[in-house]
Image (cartoon, rainbow, N blue to C red; front, side):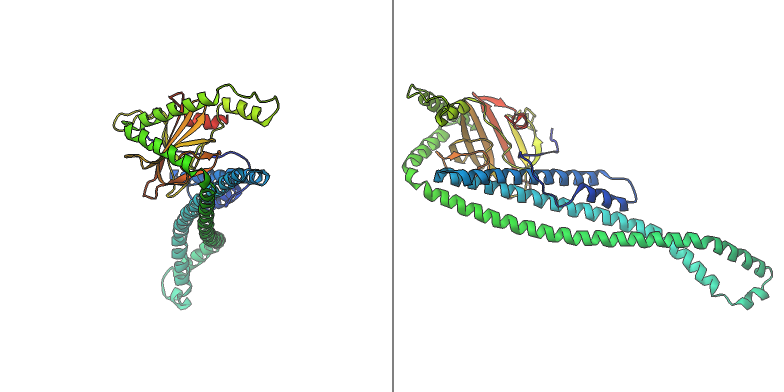
Length: 406
């Protein structure tokens, strides 16, 4: 069964919002009727996107600090790429927040216009009646029997109605002012959306340039990478399906782990090597690799009756996809029916599969840090990315792992 649950993919703190909660509350004061589900959905989407943007910005600052502190060129480039990818995610979230903001303002203007139309009708008719009565010649009242008495009564009634008319007129003017304010907000939101699109385009270009720089820096390892790529392609040709391919990659990763565990010089306590070995034995810190809406959860049945072994996230066209945890790329390329796919070996039996990518930013044999760019989502009408996480070949709940923050 499909679900429309918005999820946040990044961690950290920060402050970034195109609209504050106070703005939403003040804008709602112009609403004539109660909130509708569509308005609530837009507000929820806005808040979720704003939160994603804040967290992505905090993460990018953290990664930028790591890049500044890095002493090795490869580490610096990896941290810079991850920081830029977080900036791209931030801009993508800003873009979604801006779109939600414009939708909210549009609905408020629509409601306000409908309310103005309802208020103007009776007031226009009453004003027309007053004008018609005031234009009657006084001599006409003397020629018609009883009309003088009626005139006195009508004038007394009008004197009673004048305060009501003034009150309604003042209220109508205030509503018109609020409508103009909403229209000004719409113009501002449109400008902000245009700026967000331009910023996103610039950041994507910068990320592409940095990825090209990383490829140039890695040319010295091209022979080893080519050998690993050939092995990965051979495995994909022998695998009967994507599950079998993932199992083969896990077996290869297990062999690498066993080789790495062979006796060697024992690191001294307190050394970086000892700390790295201890970290490798723990579960990887995990995050969701793309921002969007969860449409298929762990264990859900598809229309064809197949149970999901991971999650599927509906995302924006061309959305940035990043490594959910640090690891080594053991497969990167097309796989029948799944678009471009990436398999990341995190060590100690942990493996991530990401499918349905349109373009890849990594190659087999490459080491990636958490948050490092691995590719982009498709550009179709309803792009989605599927993620599977496995531990010793068994599926693990991706969302629970990310929420645990381990």
